[in-house]
Length: 197
Image 1 (cartoon, rainbow, N blue to C red):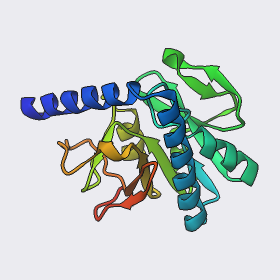
Image 2 (tube, rainbow, N blue to C red):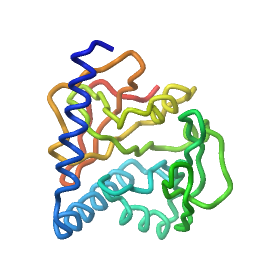
Image 3 (cartoon, one colour):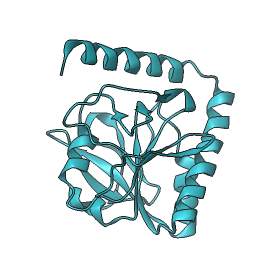
Image 4 (tube, rainbow, N blue to C red):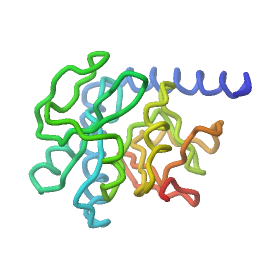
């Protein structure tokens, strides 16, 4: 990766982190309701009966309202389980969480292999930022790029970000897997170049 691209990624991550952590509790609650509404609409409109999602960390877009709806509506949700070597396995979301690798909350159920993500109807993934061409910027550890790149079949991939985290352009490296679209608290975006195959 060129030095200026690396510097740009670092600057974007820093700005996004500061913006997200600087929000009031009321603003976070408002956005959480918006994320739930948009994700429910996306899943309902697509007819998806199984999806991946994530248990949000502090500062990540809060999708807990969507996760509750999915459990109550019979939508099967796989949540990530961090493995050594920056790899992801999956477990079915039952609502119960345990502290996993790095103290990240993870589902407590039986583990499924990385490839289980290829069997869902829709992949919902966290992100730092996205751009109009589908470039997804993560937090720099490569968990999701490795997982997405390893799938033989890739369902549509939607990154969850704030409206302010949708950029005109972001640096993209060869290992960066593009996404189909993005979900914000106010809308669902679909990109011309997507992540499914």
